[in-house]
Amino acid sequence: MTIGSVETVGSPIRFKTKAEVVYEEIRRRIMRGILPPASPLNQDALALELGVSVTPVREAVRRLEAEGLLRVHAHRSVLVSPLSLSELSEIYDVRLQLDPHAAAVATTKASEEALARIEQMARTEVSSDPLEQATINRAFHRAIYAESDNGLMIGILDRLWERTDRYRIMLVSSEIDVKVVVQEHLEIVAATQSRQSRQVAKLIRAHVGKARASIESALD
Image (cartoon, rainbow, N blue to C red; front, top):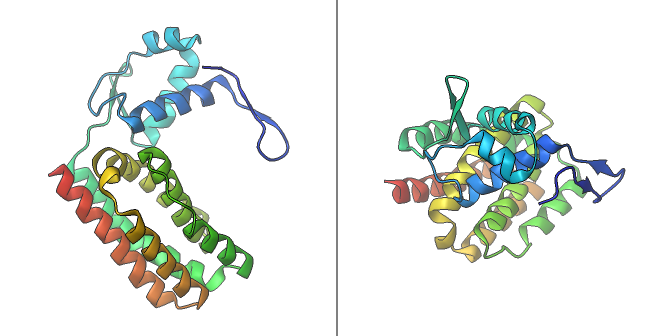
């Protein structure tokens, strides 16, 4: 892999630091299950494999720890965070409150241009690849709650989605009925375009609740 790559999409061109590239690679391995839940992460060995010093690896580890994807013990031992029903329950208890509320607020604030963009995202063909599928799904939902224009709430939801995506990818992505997901997304879009904030909140709550039930069933 290339360390210190350049990002050319959009303007201006931005060079990625070694820590950013290492972060993305470790995260990819965690999300793909290449680094399984509860498995150890050897920072020295990983640095050697990626051809970098241990410093960018440690920076990446701190970032992933903050996102809840890694656990650091005694300042040295690093483990991939395990999947647990209790963590999942805590995350969804919060998401079932914040996701509907953020979407309802966004319904009253989103511009017509933003709503048109969100509708186009809802009609995007979902990939058969679990990670790409989760990325497309998350992009759709983030496009909605980002229109709430509440930075704190957006940041909290970003972190919660980071943690739930791993469960979704590893446990249920291959069993998701894409047509049902697309239909539910389009219903959410229609209610948003009609500025029906209560209906949007209701649809989001049901949509998120269904995802929770599927993941809990698979994990249990």
